[in-house]
Amino acid sequence: KRKFALILSAVMAASSLPLTAYAANFKDINDVPWAGAETVINSVADKGLLSGYEDGTFRAKNNVTYCEAMQMVYNVLVKTGVAKSMDAVEAYAYMGTLDTYQVPKWAQMAVAYGLKNGIIDMQLVATKFAGGNTAATREDVALLFGNALGGSILLRRKLWNRVEAASAAE
Image 1 (tube, rainbow, N blue to C red):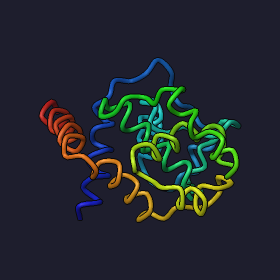
Image 2: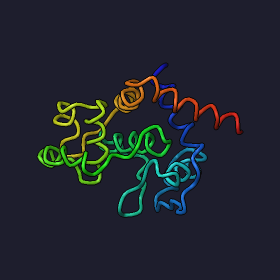
Image 3: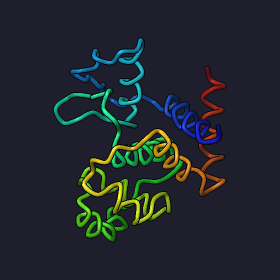
Image 4: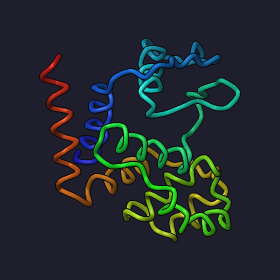
């Protein structure tokens, strides 16, 4: 229940973010089998919390990888103001190791952030993030969010306050 509440909190906080200047327009958005998918997916993408692939697709039916999940965690923390973007100089300390494990370049900042802040450890990088293609279960994604928010009462409180403010505004 607690892990679900953390994820729900992150999604609710995301819904309170202002829209960015661009709009998502995925080629395959109509392939999603549930009503309202286009609106929800585009809204979250417009807020910069997730993105599609370089070919303009979203691939909603695909499993999410550990790298994609860590990128979403990082985006939620930064875009909601719960955390600051990792400085490139700080991240540089991890890049050699991440290259060794073939963590995709697009995910390296988020994975470095996760390592620096204790969200993930090197064993997880070596076994789940290496190569960038290992699928993460719902439980795995919940644990990443839980680790990201669970390490600090202040982080949890800051995100929860944003969620409450967004709910009160509706």
